[in-house]
Length: 404
Image 1 (cartoon, helix red, strand yellow):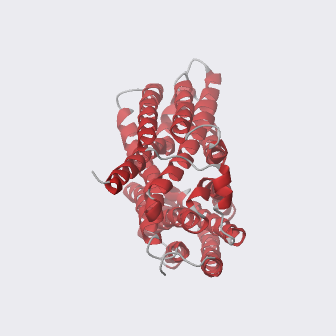
Image 2 (cartoon, helix red, strand yellow):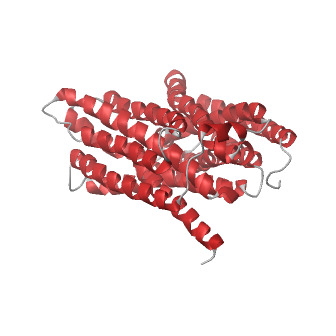
Image 3 (tube, one colour):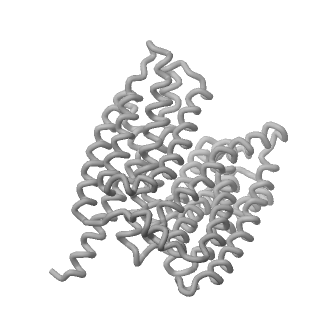
């Protein structure tokens, strides 16, 4: 067996094992299937149950941001297992909720929200860093696969958990899946260990940073924030958008599903395109798709237009999620990826916490989503301008990159 072939096999072993763990952690975003059963079980209102997922979003963001600073503390495979164990403990703690103990709601907040969320964010960051190292010559593909697998996992486990709820309780699902996640974490950690790929150290991370990074990264952050904000304004109220425009239950289902499918397809496609074009061009395309979706619904208000518009927003959101992280790997450097991705994800955290609330404020004050659509249009236009500025900044600060 040739050395090159052996290296290729080890690279794909590392890549696909981390994809397995990433998709499993995507189950964190299958939370919506548990909302109604938990409300009945704990006799807690929708606000209290929703708070659990808000904590999970913040904890996930924190896990992504903290993970790169752990690279010097332990090796990559052990770090994957450690973060996985954090999520496992969280799920098992959440399984102890009981209708006989109203205060057990805190088991959900701490277990599912804080621990599962933080562990999922940590494994997400480490997995993306490792897959970028393993597939260094295909950085866009690496990001498309890594980020897309997480989104695909949320779709798959939403279906799996919905089916499981017809036979067992929420507590049993948390308990069983906790041990499943433990097995996946240990297996993936072992495979990554065998593959021989490791995380970069801080010294190498500093040396790899190109001169243009101080100019490029603020644009990446702002463009990502605008794209995420515009997308989440629509995605965060997907069912309500279609209902407000007179959609039926079937239309609402189609709209919500189209968002998830578009998101997963967009992430993978954006990653692949980023190996062919400049990621900045892919970002421009993402913002244009989002803009077209908002304009469609403004010009042709109606339930089917809302369904199509939401599908476009899901696709645009996926493109955003794939293009901007790919730009970090391609133009800032693979060894710097984890640290800068941890900072980039803060933009998503800002958008995730504010965009759904802002959209709700528009609806409450104007009794319509029309004003929210205008706001989304504005964010898309600003995103386009930032992406164009990003392209020219990249061209000025780098001497080589993907063909445009």
